Image 1: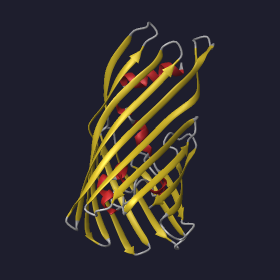
Image 2 (image 1 turned 90 degrees about the vertical axis):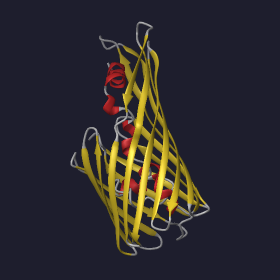
Image 3 (image 1 turned 60 degrees about the horizontal axis):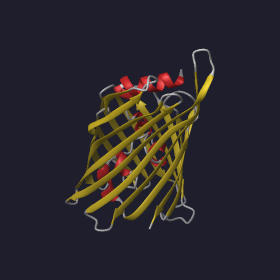
Image 4 (image 1 turned 180 degrees about the horizontal axis):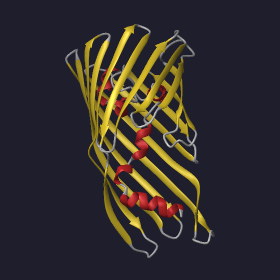
Length: 301
């Protein structure tokens, strides 16, 4: 029964194609309720807003791990390079999967394990537009495999583009805009029990967003962003407070308008410098099946 549900979702529910991307990338954004579009300035920027790579310095790396309920798991790795100031590059990888699902026949007889894995590979470049703005472009490549007993592996392959803009009105105020999943689709080759295959294409849900970040004083930044997709519209709110050179605290509300997901987070700098940071975020699970924790490590060199 589980295999039937998974394969049916792959074959007909276009709005769920690449849905694992909606959980975001990196503990810092998660701790702010996802309201990171206008603030993005670290290696995870290719996901939130590729234009934010311009605000990164030198080389940086962010790795994160999210153990989820229902035997799901997700992890990500992102790298940024900005040595010239006006041109920056980024690479990112996101993985989501589940294990431990048992396929069963109609009479309940176990047939074997179901393996479900999704990967997104992103390449991004950002260019400064003078001193007041930056423009970013990202390409994502998607791979999805569902391997079930008796029918074998069904595979989905696809791609899409992301565009991002940040405008720095002054040191306190930043405006941002993004377009995600431009020309995005996932092409499926689905195996059937009759040893036949079928091919179908799912369109990735297009996402248009606007965001703002305001810094009332040096240690505090407040952010908000709105998104409109093919299926819904929602708002994210968040804040980040650098309590000390050692500790930064975050809080936020995610997906206002389609539900409420409170979020909390923090970062520790063991050497009181940005070279090494330990990140943590806690938020409710999008499926309403428990809560999720996002732990990560940030490096600058």
